[in-house]
Length: 132
Image (cartoon, rainbow, N blue to C red; front, side):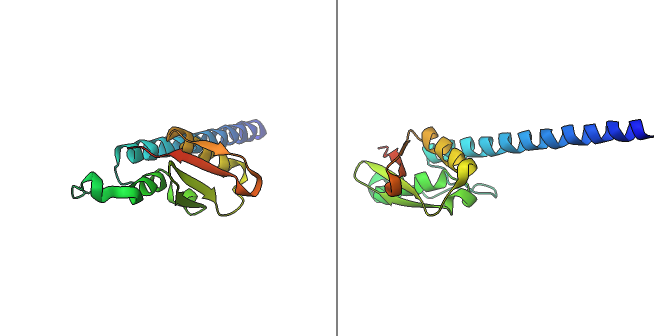
């Protein structure tokens, strides 16, 4: 019985390891999906998508660029960030310490949007270029 118990414990460990990997893959896929949706101008929702009323480019204006970037992030990460429009880019700045895992997720999303990280001490931020 002891050998069977050890075998089951090893199996449980392997299943737990697989769950960790699958969760990371799921988070990455969610981030990629959000980035693609933001690039296409599709609103990111958890429920069934709804058709948006057509809006001209003039009406979309500057706020649209900030909203596109904001929508690229899952809600939990979006809550950790502030978004500010600048002349040529959208500045994405952490509201608090992110930790390595959240930083990596945010950096990945920003890179997916064609952006980069600007290391400047207290003024460090992510920069996403505006798209016309």
